[in-house]
Length: 287
Image 1 (cartoon, rainbow, N blue to C red):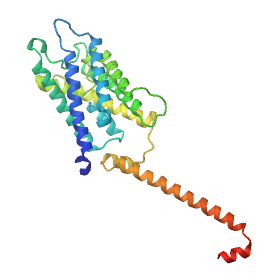
Image 2 (cartoon, rainbow, N blue to C red; image 1 turned 180 degrees about the vertical axis):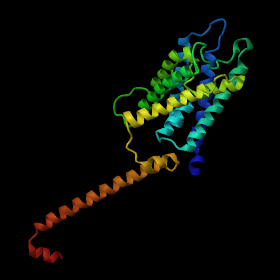
Image 3 (tube, helix red, strand yellow; image 1 turned 45 degrees about the vertical axis):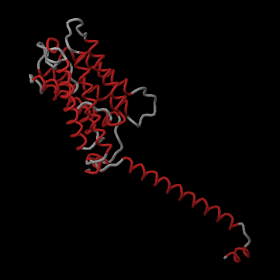
Image 4 (cartoon, rainbow, N blue to C red; image 1 turned 90 degrees about the horizontal axis):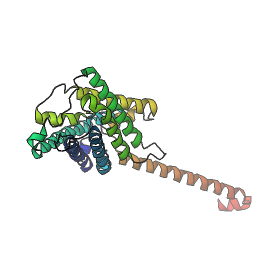
């Protein structure tokens, strides 16, 4: 486990999650600021968050998986696709990136436009329970989309995962903005809350998305498309002992051994066939 933490790939993945979340929060919150000359519409805000996620998935997806969201990272942990340690480091990097992105936006934005920095807030006609339920459902559909479009077991044409995930984020915003301003992402809510020092019903934007991530992962990975991993395999992944490159080498070595064994058996059969057709006196000479 410590060997994986100290590896260059692990460090690059953590850096990618930090930078990706910073950029996502900076552009997402920035597009939602109430500029007097051109106030943003709900469609504009929804597309901005979706385009930001789609772009970043395309850029850093091969580096860290482009979670950029503690709820998505928790969903991958529940699915036994990342280790406990990577889950913790990813969430910390995402939270720090969100704070950095919100802080940069605060510094660059005029005071009269800054407002509350697009902090998530519950609609006055919405209860805390309703807000949690909405956040749960919009995050659940995002997590289902993430697993469905990145599942390596699929052999059909799934198109662009980055585009699909980006549209899923936009879809969530088209509904969620009316209820909670749409979080879907605890880091997105955490960043501006820290910078502005406002935490009204902040727990809603953790409980709802995190529960949505858990439910989405359970539905996809244990009900819709169950994995064939045994308990030992899952445990090795959660402990950080599973090395995909090493496992691939072992699988190639196993296939090579099987091929050699089959070759030797076929040669033995050929030899036995030729021997059986040799006259007995010649067989005695050969022996």
